[in-house]
Image (cartoon, rainbow, N blue to C red; front, side):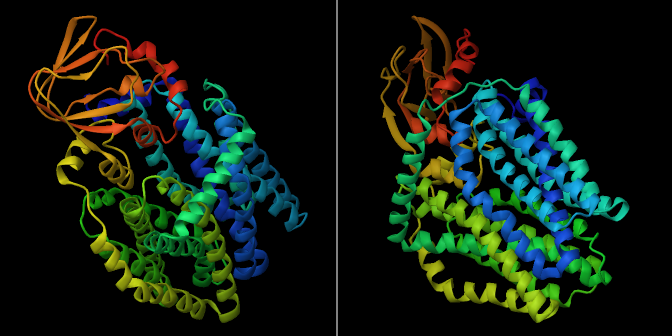
Length: 546
């Protein structure tokens, strides 16, 4: 396997991936910058009350548009869908800038912001499809996902900081102008990315019906799974705080300065930095037997930092509290998601996470609206105390049940995790995905002289060698020998051809086996095997199968 940093550097130099990465960087900065600017505009017109209501209104269309966006990304050429999403955002941002500069009232500004928020929902589904289609190897795809994750987290603190500076120096229309330009550039870059249309080879109508049916099945399964409901509830509690934080960036800035909201960008950046730091340490959760302490610590950090804002009068203290809040959110999201992976039936876990995503947006909207009303009706300090005390109180009520779930959940085998993390294809995946792979992995034993893979047969498994040695041949010619830690069989899973080589055990061999669907879902996030195979077959069919 190649060195991880070498693969990341190679992915960054690829022209297609570089266009995607640069465009996504502009999008991430613009998304977070204009969101905060819109709340600053609303706060200036009607205080925390209006800011909270506007946050709900801006988030609501995404709940309806997101499923349609996912269908579009699957049905049409994903590069074009990505460009359309960026173009919608750019146009809406520039229209908002014109409406603010012309002072023609709030309704045109909010309408443009709603259009931009709807355009945002096209971006991530399309990116999830275009990345597997634009990369050449599984390692390249993993590296591209690592880079995209870093870019998005970076945008979480650059966007708000940029918005704050622009508002302070040039007024509320300036961030919309700059961010509109960034997303317009992203649209032009996306137009130069070539992908395969209709990767799923289904009609939109069938896809809609299938997704709706799967969602209903997932909700029915969730109704009967008390432990998963509780974990999803914890995640939703965190989303409530995120929604509240969006409004509090602005309300806290105004509280500290007597009305000036430009420091909101600084506070939003502190939250983003905390989220980055939190996400970098969550890899320590992989394989940990008990996750309830991490979940409890994260929820407590969210609630107590929210309450502590009520008494924080200095900028440094407020920055520290928003930093803690961002870190707590990252820790909660990974720990609770990992627990859901451990306790959920394999056939519905994906649909459970569909429920998580829907509730995430809904809970953010509720959190924004509620904190706006509390701060406006009770005053700033009382509203924060009420919200901050409620969060840990809910945790305390559910803590016994959380520990009970923790005791019943089975952590993955350490050796299985070691093998998965040692494989470059998997090593950069998020903790919940790695744990799901560990749960789904099957152990296989092949005696010396036995056949592991037969050239020409369809591929249905990916293997990692745990113990022993194998010989790889093609058309009778010896290509290489592989031993413990090596991966086998990705070509047939990532293409529409049969096995390209025969693999024979030269000693007794123990293997980890991963089914086709779990493998593809983990590595690509989407089961677009045929489209990916067409792009990668030529690359893989070299004499060394690399």
